[in-house]
Length: 151
Image (cartoon, rainbow, N blue to C red; front, top):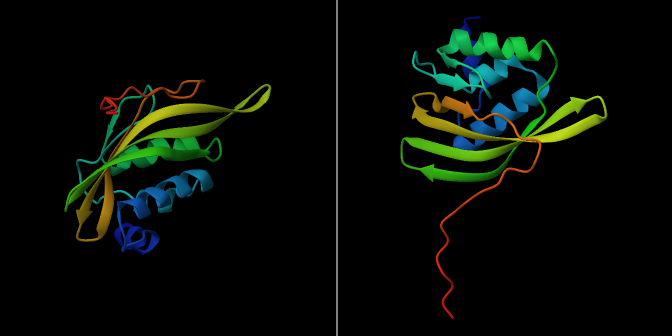
């Protein structure tokens, strides 16, 4: 079976960018490289930046980086506090990833701020960019402009 065909079968071709995001994080949690790569667009210019890592360009570099991570087990990460900017052909999700990290004192949570960019392709919504900040041991802080309350 060709890689392209297996990618199409592994991904959900219907639905929204939210469905691809859910599939991406499920693939991380199960260390399923084929399902993870099925979430990515079949384009040369896809990009991934892991916390503190280099810019990875293209499916080969992205796949190799996740395979190396999966060699150590699953990645227990969950998207939280998702903020979305959507249009007809693209969707940007900025979120906080809650990541379970094993420490000598047992599992602890770390928080990573990430941005996932999706494009609507002929195969449906697909990830074209994932950029994650270095993690923090404390809950990620947000600063936002809030309109003044009118009484």
